[in-house]
Image (cartoon, rainbow, N blue to C red; front, side, top):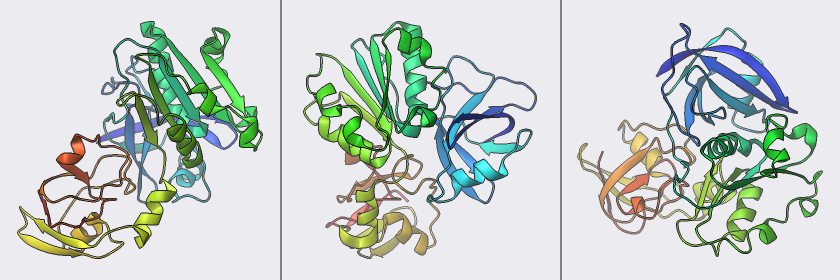
Length: 318
């Protein structure tokens, strides 16, 4: 973990502040690539993940941008109300579960609201490397559009486009039309709130396998429903290292059952979006509910924070 100093806090848009984090002695920070995030230990005992939104080639600071969500789990409110310039804060080294494909081919970047944070870093990386790309940034209004001035250079080059729906999605970007005909070799990257994510996923369902990449901010409502017990299966779980057998109840996640058994298991977001709780399994078929693992990875690993036991006995490497 890194103990960093909050050098500055900047008003970026209505409800959004960015936090510039530096080493207290001015040292270089660990490197990262566009799409990376850090875990932030927030006053009040929270740990949350925030994307790094400044250029990846500079090493003197990290910048995260946070939308204050009064209806959320408390992390964003704590940052907005309790953190001050000069405070020290503990963060992890960067991890990247949403990397850019470095190969050739046009990149289509879509951001909804605060989902601009990883996408902004991607756009600037693509601009620097000379790759072909376009960025579409969907918000309610100009006042709620973070980093608008920073994107003006790309907008002037017809590489960044702003779409404001003023609260009516029908007045915003026609996502289905934009994604109707993918160019050969093109790649799609998107991030934003649940409704936006659902719309982009539906509009890109016909894109070639492996060409669509996304990252969720927060919990998908469908996942919340499963975790409430409407879709989760009960089952037996064996822990190889701990030599324990667990009975996972309907509606209970693997992580909840593991903790009830007194077995330590690292976790962070507990909503299937950060990858911290990835565990190898040797047999069985867990009920995957995450947004991180590829189909290939799911044959060997499971994110226990959001997964169910599945119909067959499951053997975990714990």
